[in-house]
Length: 241
View 1 (cartoon, rainbow, N blue to C red):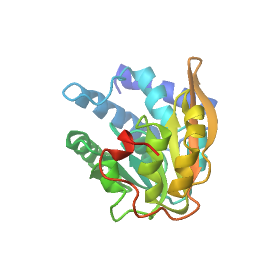
View 2: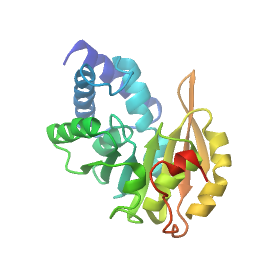
View 3: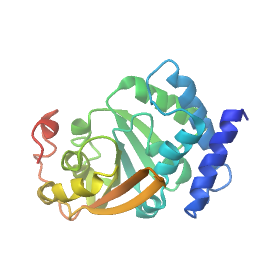
């Protein structure tokens, strides 16, 4: 194991143990392998601006595995990660939660190729990678079939719910990883949630470090979403609900 990988392992394990999160045997090794692949690929492709081992361990991996998200993700859930980017939060969760199935969705083929290669190299059998815009994916065969939909650093909540709620079956949950503005966004998104078949978004604050105050926004699907949502490509961003 390289010095960078050792630092990464220690930082991730320390942060998770502080939350009372224990990873099963072998999971930390796969997390480290994915981190190393991400850093190597980042030299030739802009995947992320966060590659230093301790910072990546906390801000990418530990964030994905915060205990509130782990407990909100139902057992055996069919889960979409909408706008997954470099694979967050979907990849760490897929490694840590082999009981769940994940569909990682991103519109950029370069990113999805990286993820497909990583999934194969890590031997993950519970991950599918899909190249698609969020609006198109919301009208795909997965519509109203998912138990959970994840998102991180994708869009404001009122836009994000138009991407995620149409995917969910009744009783499913949208889990949005948000920064300090997440609580205000959740309040502003109540109308969008109602229109799209969701309950009022609920927020849980958590901290990655003293200067990183974040929150998880959970929106439960309570009724079927109208067939007119999501609207055509680009409209949710231009004209939010």
